[in-house]
Length: 329
Ligand code: AMP
Ligand code: MG
View 1 (spheres, rainbow, N blue to C red):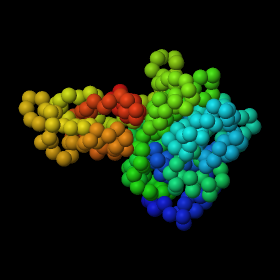
View 2: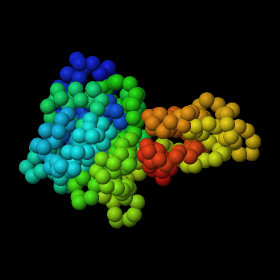
View 3: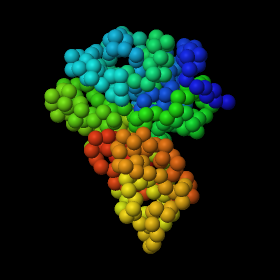
View 4: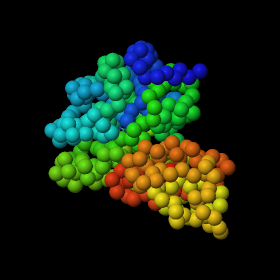
């Protein structure tokens, strides 16, 4: 039986005990639900890989409560501190050089000389990390390659009783995984788009920051870029301007002019074949709804999920990144 409890102080205290004894706790964050383990405990970190079915070469993000905690295991340069001041706590993950002789499990960074870190803003995640006193390694709380969980129910569906406790605290406000930036080299670059955009980062640094999404063969800079990700079990068709018979529709904005091929209007689709990411065309609302709505439409009786065009600006870049991976899956 999965232990799913509301994220109050008493349950956070219990979660701390579980983590101290090498257990796994699913915790809410502002991005997606994370599967947390003590990042200094090799046995606990190994469990994350086992439960998720995550390839051992794909490193994890380490979540901390304050910057001083990072200095124990990674090098923070001036430029990193500037980014940290501006964007933390929040949905930004920085890849930093790992210090020699640190106390993190080697598994966390999959043998690399760098480590990914983030200070989340969600109050439950913060309280949990603070009470633990050690950093928490936490990838998304789902089976590797499948849709990320943005509610406690999604965690139950994906990992069931493989987790010792699920701290339930409603839906995630952002609903997309963090922006990942590589700060370990000469030039900062974005490895995974997220709610914090390239232009926001460029503005703070006073230099253009580019996306390196690892599409070119042999130039992958982040192991996660190699993986099939965020995929529903049925095909996903992008930039749909109409729908085929049997397809479900994931809309964005108005569907007034959306038709069904060979006759019919999208507006008349039954409820279970239709979701709208944001009727008003708000990209943040769309990001928060993305994974939950893909799940709702991911039913074997549907031929595919047709997705309307999402503008490739701001957080739309991150939404389109996840959708492209879903379509390639
Ligand atoms: P996840 O925890 O699955 O949401 O994703 C974390 C992402 O960060 C994955 O794409 C990882 O491959 C990437 N990542 C984590 N640590 C590193 C690192 N040290 N160097 C490069 N990429 C990393
Ligand atoms: Mg993940």
